Image 1: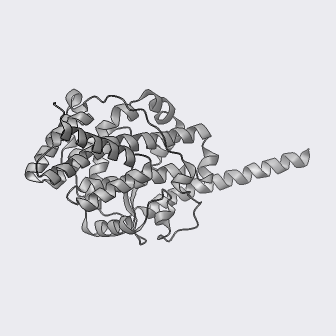
Image 2: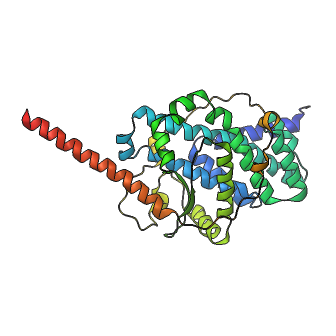
Image 3: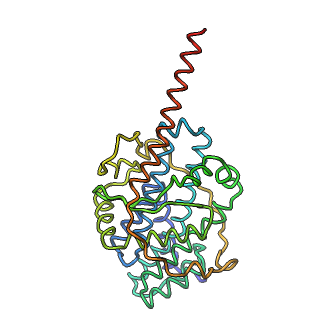
Length: 329
């Protein structure tokens, strides 16, 4: 592709904007939502802002006293890097797509061929052209979900380090078995909708979860509540952002993300086009079943209370054993 002065300016703009907003979980989450406010037809940007909020909450969970006690420092660092790496990779791939759409709107012409310079999949370039022509909002949401889950498949899910140090280790296996992890859709009320994450390493499961969440988020009642929360509640990375609206027993303190994590510098590699090597499976593009608007806040926090109860019980027994040993001594 010939690169003239205008094209260089566009590339410079997209690269700088993406880098500036890809600093940490806070900047990514905010960038997704600000883009959605400008271009609400790109529904995926709102979905991404919610999922990114959840990634931040999962990160700061690891700094809570119970998790510090139950998991070793290395285990917590590795889990954090799993969330952080996936969060960073998805943004580095998706945000240039959003900015190219913005430039296309500003210039009143499709400019999606620019995306090849950012190693965006040929699948998404085709889908953006389709969206520009037909404005099929739901198809674009589905395409972006499929794309981003493929983007993280090799560098995170299949990467040897994460396979050996995270996904094959007991903390992840236990969390997966008991379904302790969920994507929550917060509101400024006692309602807490969402969906449980199960078998995260399975690409098809992640795609189905994304489609399920999209169906749930954009149902009228849930959308209104979640949108108002995101609009008026600043994302800090702490679960306190939404827990203050819930009727819950006293929870362990979840810290603010920037108080416990530094900015991570990521190494990027030349990305292979996943679409050229594997294509899209038919089951990925089937219509998602209508998602029941089930509130999962109660069961989610029941599971957490069981985990915390185990931690506190273990603390008591450890203390008793310590005092008993010292007394005999």
